[in-house]
Image 1 (cartoon, helix red, strand yellow):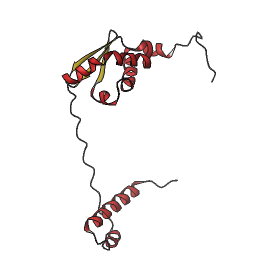
Image 2: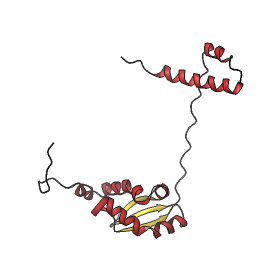
Image 3: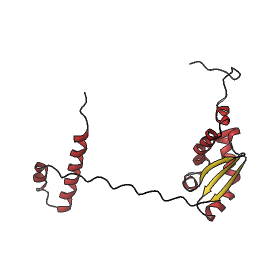
Image 4: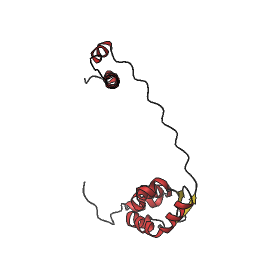
Length: 150
């Protein structure tokens, strides 16, 4: 694959994102954690891009104040990451995130085979014996679901 210099008729990568607002928003969402850091990225989420203004959902008034205080720095970092595709302004609105549904409980582990249970009787500590049986049963259950290599 040969390198093609600018002016060869191919659009620049920035223009590909600029053509479709949803792609530009995707780019800004990807750059967001790098611009704001992990703590703020976990709590504040870019949700829309309207007239060169990035609208950001924050969970409460305290995070809104913190975000507004750092808006200039964040815009500078976004500009460094996204160049001309960075927004000119940030707009913050309060809306708590919905609680994520709890993960379903893991499926029950089938009991260990009789031979393993008999061997486990030699373990004097009941808690250790129970942990051993659970580990062995889980290992054997997972191993039995694997397909042999052809």
